[in-house]
Length: 504
Image 1 (spheres, rainbow, N blue to C red):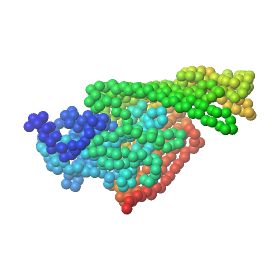
Image 2: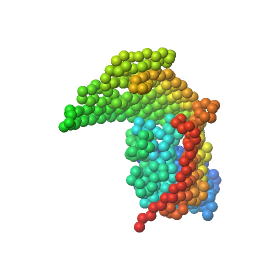
Image 3: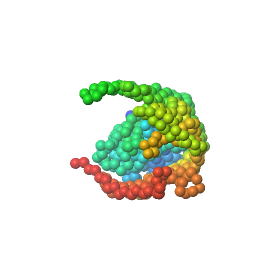
Image 4: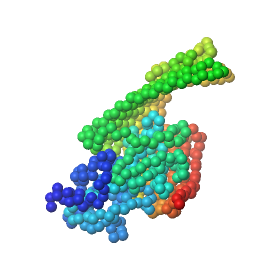
C-alpha cells in the first residue's frame, strides 16, 4: 500500500469522531496536516496511532491501554507505533477519575488518525494593563460542581506557555481558588466538541478579584497564520465623559474626563524562534470647572521578548522592558505654600510661596528591566508534569530631578530621589501530579534572590492537594508559604475545604 493510500485509509478509519470539529479555532495545524508532517516511521508489523494537538502549548498527556494494562503514555501531536489491535485511550485534565476514554483500532502498516471530539480551553490571565500575570484560578463543572484543578497565569516574556485544558464538551465555571460552586463571582464558558476556546481572564490587583472574562481576539484565519511568520495588530481606543451637577447649596459643577490608548503587538513565530514586541501608550486628562487641565493617566511602555526553541521542551529566553511617562508630574496646592526641599547631596533649602511644583520632568523616571534564562519541561507524563525556569533578572530606574512629596509637622517637604539598580536570580518550579485515581497535587514555587543574604530572598510556595471523596464531594488541603518585600518574616496559610454540590 502506498503512503498516500495508507493515509487516506487511516483518515477514513480514524473518523470515529466528529464531523462538527472546528479545526479553524486551533492554534496548531489541522489534524490531517499534522499527520502528514509527522516524521515517526512505522516499524514492520506495527501500525501508528496519531492523536493531533489543538495547540502548540502544554496539552496533558494521555494513556494507552490494552487488555487491562497500560501500554504507553504519550503527548498529542506525536505518532505512536503500536502492535495491531484494539486500544483504549484515556484523556483529559483533572484527576484520573475525571478522564474520558476512546476506543480505537490499529492496523498493520497503517496510520490511524483520531480526530478529537473533546474540547480544548486556553485561559490567559491579564491585569488591567493587558500584561500577563501569574495568578491562579479554578475550573468547575457547571453541572456537577466538580473541580478540575488549578490553572496558572504565565509570564510570556519569560518563555512560559499557558496550559491547555482538555475537557468534555459542556459548560464550565471559572472562579477564584477556593470559591464555592454557588458563588456569584464566577465566569462561565461553553465548550464545543473538537473546538479550541481561548479566553482572557482579567485580574484586578487592587481588589484581588477577577473582573472580566472574554474571548481572545483572533486577528487572522488559521490559513493566514500558517502562511506568514509575522503577525501585527494595532488598536486605537479612547473614551470621553462629561459630568455636570446642580447643587442647591453651592455652585454648579462640570467636569470632563478623556483617555486615549494605543496598543500594538507584533509577533514573529517559527518552529524554532519566537519574538514579540508590545507597545502601550495610554494618556488621560481631567478638566474640572474653575481648575486647570490635569493628567490622570500617563504611561508609555515597550516590552520585547525573544525565545529560541532548541527543542519542544527546552529553550533560552531573553526579555526587556522599558517604561516611562511622556509628560511631567506636577503637584498643585490650594494656596501658596513654603516647601522644604532636600537634595541628594544632603543640602536643604526652602522654596517660598509655591502653588505648583514639578515632581518629575517628562520622560522621567525611566525604568529598564532585563532578563535572560532557560525554560525547560523537565517531565511530561500522564502522572506527573514538571516545568522549571531559571534565569537572571536586572532592573534600573534612572531619575533626573525627581522628588517625593511628603509632609512633616504640617510642613510640605520634597526629597530628591536617586537612581537605583538591582540584579537577582529567579527560579520557578511548577508541578501537577496525579497521585492516585482520586488524588491530585498542584504546586508552584517562585523564588527571587537579590543578594547572597538569605534575608533578601523572596518566594511564594503554593500547594493544593485535592481528594475526590464522591462524585459530588471534594476535600481540598491548602498550604501556602510566602515571603516578599513587605513581609518581615515568612508567612504561612493553611486551609481545609470540604466542598459539595448536589442537585435534586
